[in-house]
Length: 193
Image 1 (cartoon, helix red, strand yellow):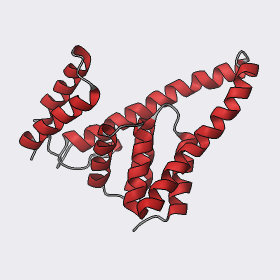
Image 2 (cartoon, rainbow, N blue to C red):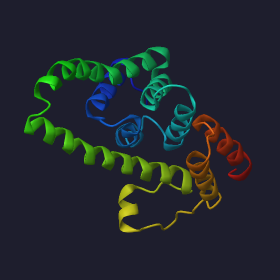
Image 3 (cartoon, one colour):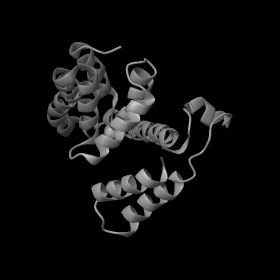
Image 4 (cartoon, rainbow, N blue to C red):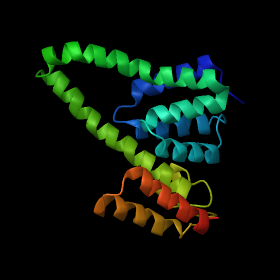
């Protein structure tokens, strides 16, 4: 089952309207909508996410481009990318004019303050989704996480040192992010078969 370029544009237009806080905010939306909807397999989305992280450019745009390409080739990638950036372009244009005028009003201050915890919530959901894709041998739905149910799910214990290695390299060294990904990918090629 694939999506047409128009359907991709509409999906990513909605994502672009709702995804405040960066590209990782897309992960819960794509997982809930396209993976559970049967348009992408979880393994395919995990691979696309990995590729999107190591290629130059914003992760959200890379993800939209790759998902669009998998679904409908070049026109799908163009439609998904344009769908994702259309709301941002319009919001930035409007915000540029309106924010200076209304930035000190209680409503705008409250609106911006309310977006921060929601963005953190999306980031936490993305963290759980990525943990499910990289740490466990079977899909572990968010509800199972919350209930502590791990039956029938194995843990990839060799992934834990790679997570720690990536964290230490990013935090304690000046190794660039793409190189850390490549180091962990090469280690994973030998350890996580």
